[in-house]
Image (cartoon, rainbow, N blue to C red; front, side, top):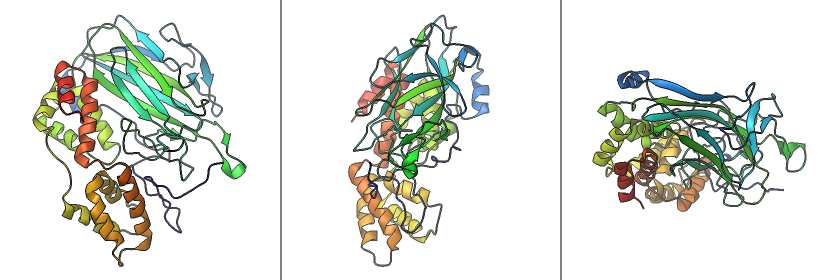
Length: 391
């Protein structure tokens, strides 16, 4: 049986309340926005897109065909929803192979990912439960961890929506649903019996031009190897041109890429990927820029946090944690301040412990995301720039 303890994490149960201090802008209520790589209709109109649907299957009436390396269709315990799976960890990737694609510059894939049982995310004790989505050319579109254990105090960390390894987000960050598939698991007694499940909706657009594409989906973990995943509502399209954005829009995406809040940074990351060479050119000019807060700005955040009452207090805490090691001294000063509210000191103590584990600055975090998007763009110029700014 797992023993609850004070989280040295991004979630802390405030004393005497049921309030949750979240290191994300979403998660846990099943009402989060869908992840999307398309920012505006205007951007697509500027691109004069020709879109061709290559593939779709929700596995309801149509079985999985030879395009899939595995064809078993299952149904959820709750709702009897069809999906391809279940797929166990530490196995060869499940692949989707599509041939004879028309001439194109981008591929867009949308799908729902079903995660069942107690995925342990980035837990220092029980993790890591890693999920990968790769292309046959070596690109890793998604390399992250997920957590279905947000009902525990001491196992509530995942890398998603960031690329693993990363400063963690709380369980179910970015999930379209959680605890909804009817996957019952018990840790002893009715009060410790839960539905550890989640559904993530992906909408990813990336550069690609060859006549064939192979997607690979896999997971890797240690310990309990009964934690599975499945796929449904899989749609693949080709797009004839890159998504075009104005310089002002690219500037906004670059700023959002360093944001602490989901879904701002994830959306910006995939919008830049869909811009292709234009994004690489923009990053070449701006990648050296820093976005760290000054010491006085960090102290202003602490003062804002001090004055808040009840919810929401996410933004100042998110921004504080995102500053990494630069926030340590201001936090120590706040903890030594006898006038700083004691319940908020407890939250700051949790923030400090997290920063000690992940001291990277806001600039470091944005650069990490920039390197990942450059690797997905995958042109020679993009890979060269990513390597130039590798840690």
